[in-house]
Length: 75
Image (cartoon, rainbow, N blue to C red; front, top):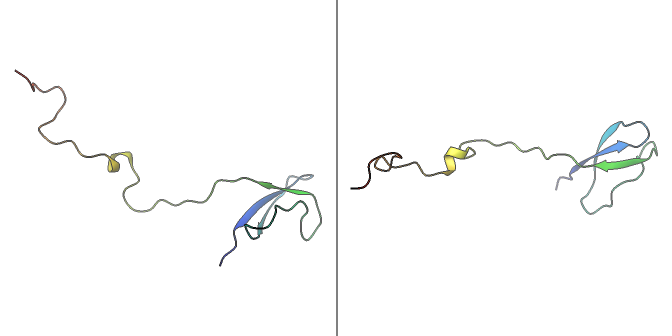
């Protein structure tokens, strides 16, 4: 099973690191190699939308030819 990668930021220098760790582990407070103080940074997940079905027009039913707006539908 692959472990997720978390982004950490060095509190003193602002440098960022990607560290793989289990989801069950508590967030790190020190860099495992240097001992520098770090904090976990929230970042957007990498999502790739592929194929059809991800557009607003794809999820709506197409209007039928008999129901156009502005038509004289009444007597």
